Length: 137
Image 1 (cartoon, one colour):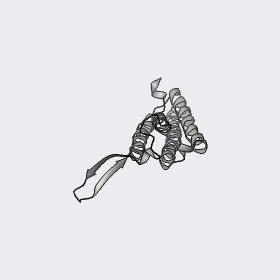
Image 2 (spheres, one colour):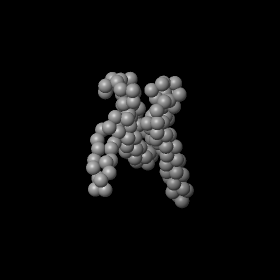
Image 3 (cartoon, rainbow, N blue to C red):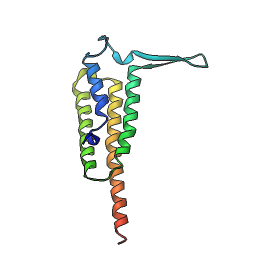
């Protein structure tokens, strides 16, 4: 049952926890806070903000969601439906909630959109291959 839970709910929940001020110092833009920085061989300094880390987390979870989309069966329909609900939650919150009007949240919402579109596309493509294989008998 837990395999049907959309993984992109994790960045959605974390964004809301940080946005509501339940974590952090309550600064004006918590997503601009530097998480780490590294000195490069070129002499430049590469830094990662909390927003960059959230987007990276969303992209990693998108990878696993696309792998989950290759499963064939009744549970994949539930998975796609729940992923669609997550996308709708992202969209509604982006339009209604003030702290969600941020580039980090928008990119996470686009990642959720890619998850839904890719999930349905992969499932439809897999279903047509199953039908094509069955026609030979």
